[in-house]
Image 1 (cartoon, rainbow, N blue to C red):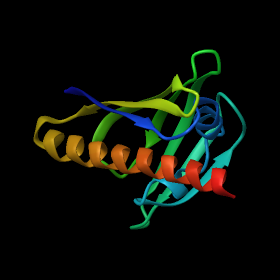
Image 2: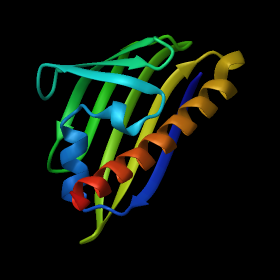
Image 3: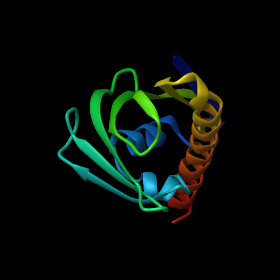
Length: 144
């Protein structure tokens, strides 16, 4: 069963800075409490991102699209310890004003009915924490 999880938040960061952080592909270990390490192999579209979870689990993403005009990145989660049949994520950054950006992180998963509620809840919490972590990371860079 296909499920869509979307978290949208206006963050206290410039849209160009937010997009620069997202389009670099890495850094998720600074944003998401559930991620202990983030390694990127390759650059741009086709790059592979390996995420090591705090419990030791591994996730492998393939970057499918980086659209600098639209400030949009799409990835395919090709390996995961979670019970999903497919997982696609899209991150979009929009300018709200000179000092704020809107971040939209959407995940499309194919998950069995009995796993649906648990997975939707887990992903929603992770995305919310990750967006908050990105905002904090960008704010700390601006203070440095």
